[in-house]
Image 1 (tube, one colour):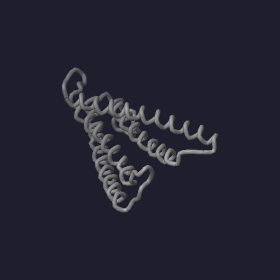
Image 2 (cartoon, one colour; image 1 turned 90 degrees about the horizontal axis):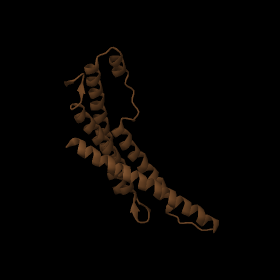
Image 3 (cartoon, helix red, strand yellow; image 1 turned 45 degrees about the vertical axis):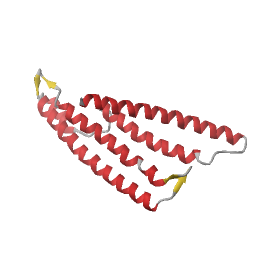
Image 4 (tube, helix red, strand yellow; image 1 turned 135 degrees about the vertical axis):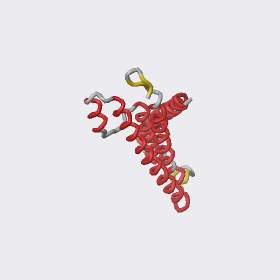
Length: 165
């Protein structure tokens, strides 16, 4: 069940990032072509900037699911070299748990920022309030945190040396 939810989240992030990239490219090319005719659409540039921001978080969601995220984990490498796979797995689980705590705190901070932006912000473009755009932060961090939670739970299903953990 958890693997199925993780796959759903992965597909959502993949299709969202692909759509976002094509939209960024299309709108940017459109704006360049319009500049040849001494005109432009004013909301395209800020919209593309926010799509870049969204794409960064979606890329983080995909990288987390594939285990390609940035990681400084010397202890698990040491235990791997010493031939202690069970200890290595437990260190990785501890690092993942700490990362989950960090993403929860960052999600909460992003949510607080979006609330403040909703209260004191203004319309950014096309009638969209800046608070809704700031909502990219807690949603993106929340999705990354969810991927780490799924990874932690799925780590208990893996086998090492033919034995269940």
